[in-house]
Image 1 (tube, helix red, strand yellow):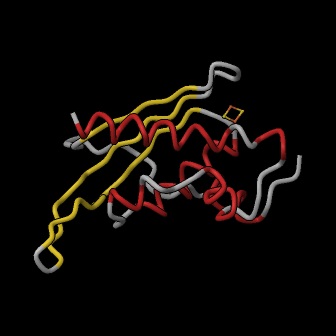
Image 2: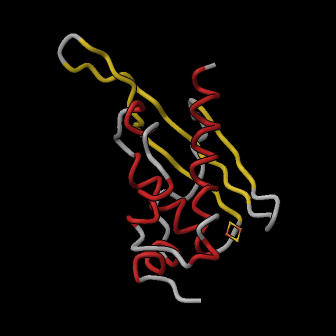
Length: 128
Ligand code: FES
């Protein structure tokens, strides 16, 4: 299976790996087919722009037990959302992450969902 240079870079040296002990929200997702699991930790702050206050992801960490693609996706996704407004985070699609990684082999496309599902869970949990 051929991975792009970008996938290998994120897999071999993942960014944002670890735990945020005082996270504002935690989300977890698993892939029942392969058994891979991802947990994502979010630190969210208010950011004032003019008269509006927006919620921003100040920090994000992940723990992923999974394949190379799942780890690369977790690393690329967490890089992308760090510092981003939640409104914009909600618009991220799996194709955006696949593009950031320069593509994924067809058999690994489903791995890109793991990160987004964990993120979705964390944001739902935060809204509660
Ligand atoms: Fe399970 Fe990639 S094979 S997420």
